[in-house]
Length: 453
Ligand SMILES: [Zn+2]
Image (cartoon, protein in one colour):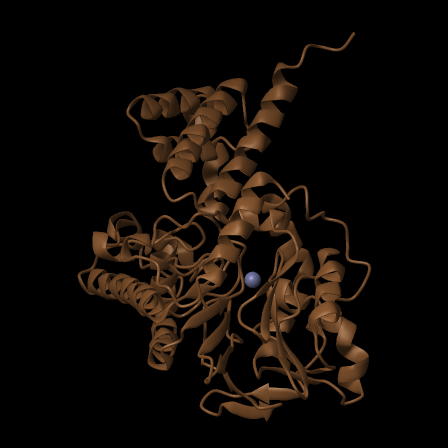
């Protein structure tokens, strides 16, 4: 664990020890003390939430709930090797056999440890509880593994290879033995502990997100309802390339959370949120921020403004500011537009057909007298502080990258990267900009390498 991850772990322990003491409103953040990329450094440890609930920390945290008649797991951790260490903590702390496993959604950092329990699930000894859309959301990932790997490889080049899969992803092939449906909570009691499993219509990270509520201790397990950070603007569109997540449904779920009045939100990444006052104020802020974004998109659409104008202009007012380290308002603006209206923008009939704007780029390069003319114009834009216009011009030169094109592109992307880092530090934005930069640097290295003997 690096020192930053150690600091995060210590902070998480302190927060957990300060049970019930709300964080100040000034900490309802922008200032989330971690970044999404720090997840990869999260070490394994068990942190007591109270005298019978443990948070099993890791890249995907999950929870162990002990009762006098056996234990319940909420999520199962990642599919990476770290899961073995996490499960060792479960074996050490569980006071009885695992009776039920509730998986909050089908992302691999939550369902990855599930196959370990497959024999007991198949034998009916362990109940596998999940949203009835778990199977559907699993299919969307399992059937598209090559597509997702090609995208993850850009964002996590050192971690995700492009090699074909050799083993099946068993956690995406398992169906819940106890599916839970919207409007029909699954309530059960085990060893004197009451559980309520709630399946909303749609949550933060997909259509299969569920909530687990312990009414007596008022702990709410939220999986990735709030995404990676807490609190943050939700990731209504993840540029990894998953389905859009509906803002109105999201607002409904946050209203359900507020009505429960939790004392603890057992959030799956980095830390729990503690204290009713803090939870009510931070969840209200998240709900109101999404409502604000929705209202502004609807207003803009009705006024005849374009999606790009709205991406540029819709900003959260100061009292609703939130971290955009994972979700990003401008990307959610576009997602909201497309959830409402789909992909045809009534901009050009050419977009009704299969020939993209880029099909005539080679003609443009030839007409302007070569790619260096584009590089010169892009450099002019950079001098005016307009790196986005520069990138658009340089995109036209794709396939004709001279050294001048690459130098201008590197400068433009470096500027965007600096702005992104000094701004919200959005993990995906930075990852994609870094990938673009790497690509240009490699190409420039090849172009400027000395001739061989
Ligand atoms: Zn997750």
